[in-house]
Length: 249
Image 1 (cartoon, helix red, strand yellow):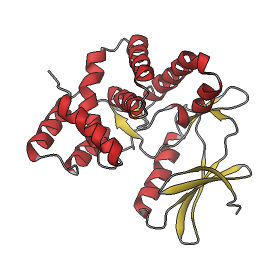
Image 2: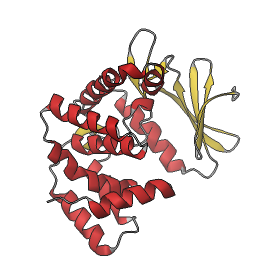
Image 3: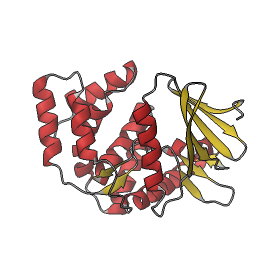
């Protein structure tokens, strides 16, 4: 197994290319349950109409867990935006179309988004009153069963040389309310200091799906709180401000 060609690196995982395979190698202390759950969830989503890399194997390499996927040749949408900034809006529109198609899928064995968020809010450092308020509002939001990627952004979309779009990194996938997934993508733009892009994205998504922007905004505070559990210091400070400032009323 060739671990020389690094594609991407995070503090908990390194991704390599080995011929026609992609190897996601996790840190030695990474949760075995989380690795197996990620592989299982991606395998479940493979049964939908979406183009996603197939899981080929789950194994260990020198004591670290690894998931092996098929390698998808192409450029990420993020790279394409970098090469052609004049096409930014066109690429965001393409991303929105792919996200809408994702939300049209059903995958009944996935974890429910509401349950995951409720649990994560319980793990935050917010005071008990704030936690109760957040969970109360979460409980009152409409319950759907749409496939929600959980980290839908330009860097997780690969366009092949034949213009086939593949969606990657399904580690956060759940089933639930699509507007929560949209709120997460909107927050990702803001976290990367791309407020203008985030505003364009949110307005266009709402326009294309005939969704009230205010309805999506009701999810922003809930999503920000749930995401604050694993955020770095800078992200945590930003997400905490969202929780403290954004109002539902």
